[in-house]
Image 1 (cartoon, rainbow, N blue to C red):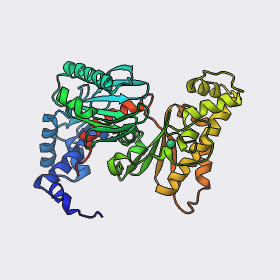
Image 2: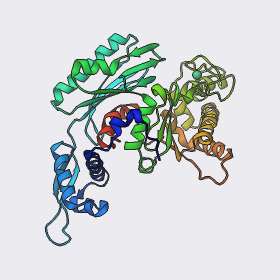
Image 3: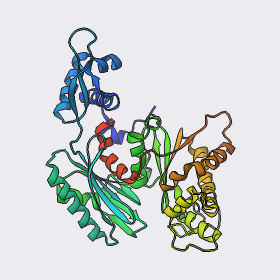
Image 4: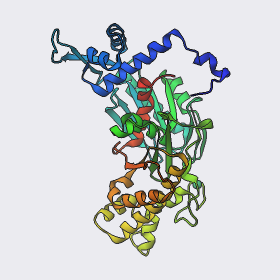
Length: 396
Ligand SMILES: [Zn+2]
């Protein structure tokens, strides 16, 4: 049940096309999830008229979204033609702006990365804008596709409506008009989104099956900072100006081993980020091994190094406090943890589960806490998902 806001009524009114659009997206999603699938199977499952489905399939083929792949087994009569998503055709350019490195990639409808380039991130916004535009132009020139779109993921607050990154603390940039500039100079539609929100969208559309079926969940990206994305009712919850989900700055304790990006020593990020793990390891170690990074400590921990394991488990205990607070406050069906920390998942999963279990949730189903399945470049998949999700999602 949803309130009708009259100031939005013009765009929300049920046009004759609305039902057709919804049916089109349903058929497209059947092809995406169940391929190879025939028109007849879709008709059986959806109870849509066979003729309606045939018309929609033609429309989707013309739009370059699906293709036929030969015939399946007959259940009597003519053998059915099977359908799947059109593969190996570039439709999305993803720009993953991370603190140290920026990656630009081109992918097909299924999210398969076909080609990518990377360069060190620039601290000067204009130089960075130039480099991104040049990389996007180079891919666009190679692709010669009309339907290319660009998704840009940034480590800060972004306002997709205006196409601007409102604030990126790591670079100290305010009001970076990156999506606007990309569109201006390449002619391609572009959208910009906070990296944690983009990852949440990637989990919703490209994550493991149980998460793709979940309508309410929260993603937690643990890296230099701690970022969260909220999927509420099958879509990103952004809040005013896209600023929701800044749980990295919720207070979980005093005297963190490192300052938060905002300067405070009380924030979740200061207690539970990769930087906190590194700082704890060095202090347990009597500051031996200065210069050792997170990657190395995680490797030591998996090799049974006591200081490394202690640093990871201590940081995980703060990760657990934050997760527990999110569960109590928002009651998600699942929490997905993303980042290099999850490579050592078995070293601390017990802490997350036990802390969440201690919360007052009597009688309520347990929230699933799991590690992401997005692989090595979750923020890049996030950037691509900004484009790809738009192809499959329902408009209203
Ligand atoms: Zn903070």
